[in-house]
Length: 110
Image (cartoon, rainbow, N blue to C red; front, side):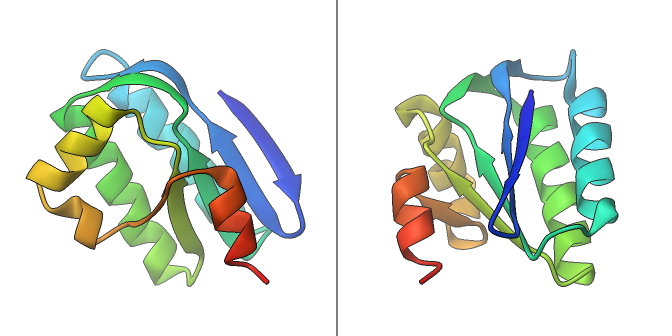
């Protein structure tokens, strides 16, 4: 997982599968980043995520709630079609701020 900080936006790039096998570590890593509060926005760039199961989704929801409580903007971009479908089926696409790409997120910052 790559983590970068640019213009007060921390970007996290998870890779591969986010599933029950690694969801606890994924949630713990995200929680550390959110709790550090070194920035005003967090962007989760999911372009490298091939698979997301319910445990991975729960890790995202838990982190999203924490970010809301700490008043940190939490956004997601670059979802693969199969991963986007999971967000749509669970109607979490209406909860999370989801962008098609990192560029579309950055254009919304202006």
